[in-house]
Length: 281
Length: 336
Image (cartoon, rainbow over all chains, first blue to last red; front, side):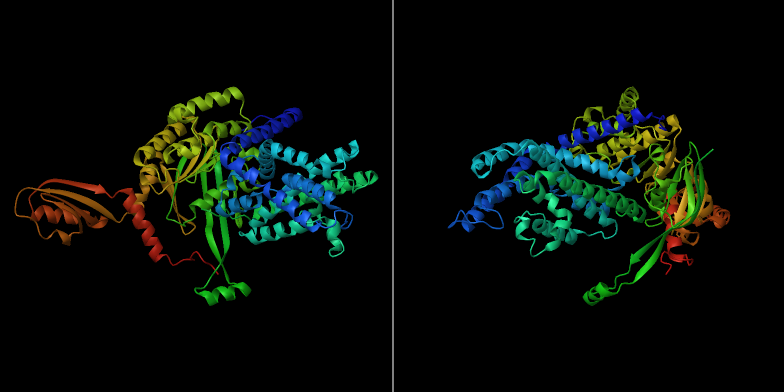
């Protein structure tokens, strides 16, 4: 079918409809394995509990003690918020999925159909996350309610708004970093060691393990990497560690990383496809 | 009017040449040797709109690489090609809406969902108007007899059923060019025939341009009148399918029915005895010796019935590929 020329408005509507349908179909797909999905979602809460035990052991004898500006309560609330941010920015299986599809040739469906692979994968991932949040909202609410005394209370609305923006942008940054690692498979078919290095680095440098204030004296360049936006920044905003006057700048830097990573993905994809030999028969 | 025009198309791959053994693997960490493999070498052909052409060749001959080049999956090392006026490897959306590639790997459908979900997504991807989509879907599901399977998850379908669903996905947007790469591979005889009949009917009805690669000569004979034979990346025949036998078969088959005793014992001097079920005997004889052999046999024996037959296409192709594999001394796959 050669297709008729669409007006700009029709073109926009057609694109939005496609994104919506990818989202809908991916949600349906995600709900097929409901047992496994619900179990894996709930199991992800276990590290939160162990982390709270760990920090309570560290602060056991002196609850008023402060570690680079964090007392025990702030440490727990920081960790809960970091877990929430990671629920947005972690992309399990994205890099390996892309790399696998390049290695076994199944990536070809994105190349022969008039679709944008990165766009398709993005909406696919949004669907996964939405289903995840639908299941995880209960346990998250319960956990935050149980730990409510550790939080300083609701921040001012600009802080809450900045927190939500930062969370959404952490999703985009997480997606773009992991998609890029997957695209590297156009050059090196096996990227598992790269994924391992990324997981390790992001665990340290995103603030997932400990607040970045505790790392910055050892790793002074930590503020100049995109990893901090995967976990630390949203949590720090919500806890008031970023002054309200600095919020726009912080969000703008995060947005700049998104644009930069998006351009890097586009460039890598277009170069990679030209290099692609269509493995897998 | 030409739908596909290919001129001097070449595609080379750089392949890591690994020596045997652990020490060689360790050495390979520091220094690697590569060789350049030519998958397609100076391939040229032209296919008119509405033609259905078989693309034949042994494994590794360059058939699939040519299809990948024509569908834009691979960029050529040199040469040109246009399909429906588009350069395939520029991968314009306008081109991607006009062709389909179906491989035996069957990968267009979402595995865990019923095929109708994938079809609905195809409707949006290819921007098929709702009414036309429904009409096409009804027509294709009817022709391929899969209506009752539309609600079943793809992973629960048999191989043959999945292949039929793949064909629907490939044809929903009414492509003008269809590349079929081993579409019946792994299917049982019934499914093979069903797919075959569908393709024949559909191609005649819609007048679409089709390139078919298949190792099943029955598919090829049933569907195509023209064949392009490729071996080691080079086109060695482009013409009517029937001409392959004329051109490449060096033998004919003589079927004899003898009348009564004595049983002939000297038949092997005429050619290879393929089958003996006395009084019937099948002999394979060199083409240029057929008349001479017939005259000798008739002079020496009492014969009730004689038929001279061409060898089956499958045998001719197999012989052709094995001969060219053994004897071709031109530039081999590896050129450096």
